[in-house]
Image (tube, rainbow over all chains, first blue to last red; front, side, top):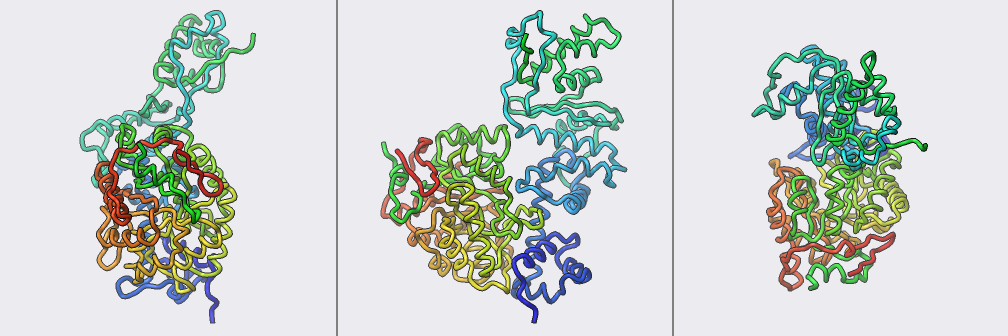
Length: 290
Length: 314
């Protein structure tokens, strides 16, 4: 006579069945084929009745497992969902759940690997820009609940002595990110966000225009209550990256000049800095001890 | 003026249970602006712990402001107290930090397991009610309580499947976990009803099997009838049989903090308030009083969670 399964065994079998790719019944067969569990052991483990046999009861959990994760992905990636339409997004979620099951107690982190997953997913053939769009959506999730910091205002710069401005370094607010993309997905996001009816649903929603391959960078940040993002030209992206790395303003001007006059570069960097401050991207400046 | 709910907050509990917070609802994003605008007819709010284990942003800001006016309870879904996996120490550290920051009246989670093998289902999976599982859960509750420096409350879950290996009923298991570990019980009246239908037991027998001095809180919620069995969906009003069971629970367990859960197809806030007022009226009626429907914005000092038991100040 077989010993009663212990807690570990019960949970292993339960888990294998509710996460089985084809459903609970095929999951029982798969377990049996793998040699770990006989169907009779599974039947002996759970109870059901004429209303709902045991395996149908496990199906309730299997469905809840998948649909909760699908809903989570849909909430974090609404534009990806709208673009793909329900059926393709459902299939994508199925593949993702199998490849990247949740390893964090909070659902907040479940979708983190979708952009990377899309780099090699079959959907990429029809939507070469899909991973970039997902990367933008995930960056927006990340900054949504990043740490708070009061942004610097233009008037705060008055505390920066003009003769030492070149020595100043700046700190970005924690709720900011810069992502590298290979396609013009900021436009796709804006297009989907602005079109009536472009909400996630059953039918895919095509972008209004072909999506160009255009490598670049997008900055993403949290304002007072809203999440923002903006594509950056090469110069701005380079300057912001230097600023993020802690380079001082003088060094950034020199780099941006790159053959042009330093005066023109300084004017340009000054304007960029004002833009970043006005957008609320900068948290503070620092001067080295003199 | 001392409102009825404040009176309850200050009532001593000779059996060691935390005092009743009155009638609350789950704080959900859809209602953030309405709750902040105040006043409400709500005494306290329950929040999902995991939703606030973040570094910043609007949810934390809202919770900070809500906490300035109301008592709160931290209610988790991923403690996974019954899992065969080791307790997640990072999760416990986050939970402890959250509790330190917001000083909830208490911290609760579910009597279930939520994943295994390092994976999370983000669901409340039922346990087999065996002596092995009982020892396992009791030991882990004690570890959690030690880590948090306070007793926790565990909630009975709705379930759809049961195990042949179970050696006791769910209520016997729950009562024994509470007795042995010293934790409280968050008695979800709707979950009792759902599981009673799904597994064909008498919900009144369940209530009778729960020790009165362990029940800290009630949950009430709606569910969906799937034709012969029930699914706990939290997307409907509380149905009459659950209200009837709530009456029996109040008769047996007395004034216990009561919370309305509504997590899907979330209605306007006044609909939730009305549901909460209904619970308040039932509890008042059973005490032989009239419910006090005044707007409530309580002092943050009204309830302080402490390592053992609760100290209540006016």
